[in-house]
Image (spheres, rainbow, N blue to C red):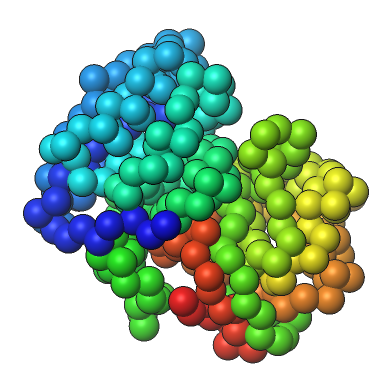
Length: 296
């Protein structure tokens, strides 16, 4: 089930399903989105703060329902990730959300919601949020975002390619996101399943041994059995947490996943970085690991 195509002039409902935005970043990110030609509509609790969350669980869930139901809202854009989406699951009517054809955009902690909606057949967009747009970025980031919202899933020529780790061509449904959230999903109703999938992997702030532990957990659980290929982005700030005894994260990822014998690329422009593509999760794709590219 593809999201409806929308273009500049459409209204994006802004929701905060996880952590709150730092002061000043809502205005900067919102201005950048509106400079692309989109209108924005802030949901009632998008700027709330409750402990470390952007409002209470029930209020954040209510904002998601409200944004998907609001006839004035054409697409739903998350303000940021952080942590908190898993706490919303008991409050959400996920079948109701998946029945909507509105584009839903976000990444990081939003991976939890992507998994749930993809499992119900809805294609969602792994892409920049208000938090991302509040920072300087390459022009192709906005181009990819606008094109994906219009239903044209292609990579701008200016965007960098990935680096071949294991060559080959593979096809499958695009799935995945933030490694921590994929590992956290195991045992839940909407657990990550990699069979037949092209798996997107990225994360932020994890120590190298935690990258190893999460990949090992997914491997031991069988979540990567029958996987078609891997699209690895950036593990931001993991190099900074490396001790003298640690392997670097690239070596860890390769050592853990290369034995699966499927095409794999590194350095694809996704993750907790300012220059990121917008990808359609749940959509069939082709990974050409020889060229470091995805196509749809």
